[in-house]
Image 1 (cartoon, rainbow, N blue to C red):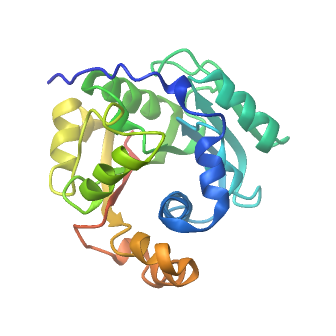
Image 2: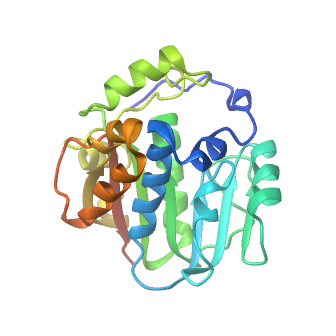
Length: 253
């Protein structure tokens, strides 16, 4: 299975672009990013020793996790300026951000030491071969029984409309960035096609969606959208048409 490799230059994205959007706490885009991070954090059960966020960009996600929740936090990305921004803005004694050369190896993080690896809205930017490398890398970094949490837009939802609009009004567009599309009904099958050994590496804990109507409500009433979004725990939300897919896998032996 092959996919086109994106020619998009991610260094074009302004420094801290998504971090600035997230911090506004108003409007659809800010709500989208805040709530996707909250949903991933909600996936944690009990205190974690260590988390690795692959594709951390400007560090916003890890900045939302308290040390009491996760004692060691490591973010990695291929964009030097964004990593520098993350360390300046959010680096601490327990939270660090590192530049890596590709998605096949992370020299700063030893294998088998993380309770959780997160890949948040990254795989849609990658070819099939890159996704395979990334998930195999996550497998190596996780402890046995550790969680791999992946989010990606759901292309069987209103996300298609949102992307169409953003491609026309936003300074940062997605039409050149999103090259591999997943949806609620094909996620497991497509991942297994990309990585035939996936069932031997991971078990699927659950699959869900978020961001159905709440991003649109956030346009008019941000706080109400937050309350609605948190009303139903995502593990109980078995609805196929939310705009964001969230999948949790558990590392086998």
